[in-house]
Length: 219
Image 1 (cartoon, rainbow, N blue to C red):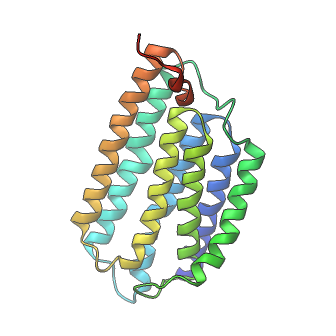
Image 2: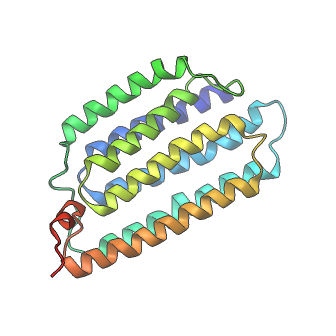
């Protein structure tokens, strides 16, 4: 039962990667990331129960920290920055949306082949965990390099972190709660700083296209 629940969560998380690659609306992309983070926040608890024992306090602390930061606080910050500007769509990405989805799907397929040959420190609680972790990580990198708007690039960075988070579930029992919560705090500080930078870019130049900053010259 728990295995099927974990598999369902991981499959939905992988599909949400494709949804973020397919949409041009930045607000929808932020909300999709929040839904993906919510699903992944449930995984530590499911993995804890799958070990034939009640999960420890640190498991619930990791889940609560993930929900608080990546489901509520960080999306709220990004949506607030987005509402302060007039641009709400990714109009001219470096890689088109159809091509991005096709590349994302190829990444998911390749991740299963790649995961088969990976040496693991411990047995994964489900066969889908490592492939989805790899797919989420590389799909996040694809979002990061294929989008022109600064906010969408921030989301790519966050999706990469979601992939790392799923990988970390392999060592859930060995990872202290303080270490994981410290990583989440670093993530929040990084996104907070990037949110401030994006806000100032938009205020000074009236756009959020990072590639246009290449044209700046010292006067």
